[in-house]
Length: 86
Image 1 (cartoon, rainbow, N blue to C red):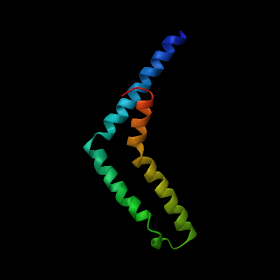
Image 2 (image 1 turned 135 degrees about the vertical axis):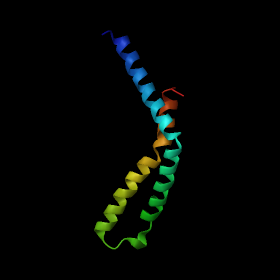
Image 3 (image 1 turned 45 degrees about the vertical axis):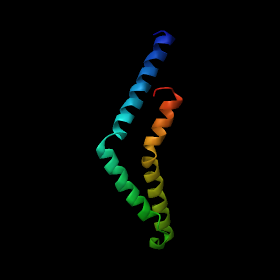
Image 4 (image 1 turned 90 degrees about the vertical axis):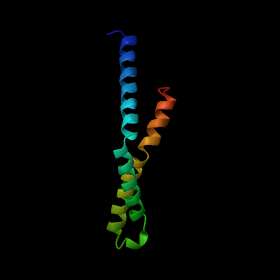
């Protein structure tokens, strides 16, 4: 396959990926999920509920995952803008 065709296919696949991601974050169900995750994030942010080092590391891991999911919409928008897909 010629290089220029391969590049066009990869670019189209990337555009489809970002369009699908954008469609996802525009759904009502996504908004509901984000609200629930924000509530969980505020629970894990409370240091007074941490009783041991093990609990601290667990909460830290949970917060890391929650923050990744909560930033998905903004990360997707920025990446699509940088690639000029929006």
